[in-house]
Length: 224
Image 1: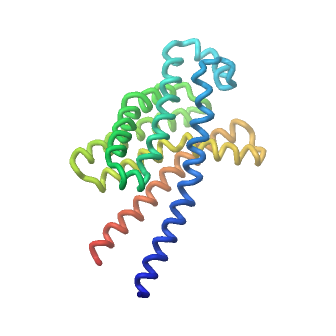
Image 2: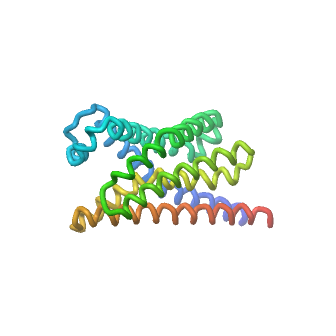
Image 3: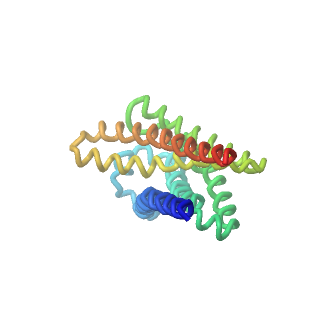
């Protein structure tokens, strides 16, 4: 009886911490999607577009920008679905098809356009290099996530997709840090650069922490 109570308590605590993580993640993800949708009016009055008006005169840059933000909206939305235990248990078909959509959009739209746009990113040479790294890392982690599930290696698939999702979520975490540093009265460029670096490195480290915990739990199950 005592063991049953302990198990129930552990499940309740685990559920609480999952909700503590996923509720803000889902909220800020949907908020980013909501704030991105007005760009598809193709109005040139947005501050970002006016700031880079010369670049937007290029048809290639213009196309890559809109393809990239479209890819971001799709990837962030489908990624939230992908990591839902409820959906995975109730309908594996939704998981598979949203996963296929996510992989296609990353490999053929999001990562390639992100790599191109990185050459024109705001900031110093190192910020542009960081954007290039993000695009390559997003592509490779997603590719390995696809190749491992095709080989029926579910554990490796989960690991690589966690890393892929960490890269996709930099768009969300960057804005959170940017707001925090803005409230702390950081200068615009310093805020931008610091938010970017903390977002990328922080997301990567957090992903590895989740992977470590999942792998340890997986290995522990063999010892029971």
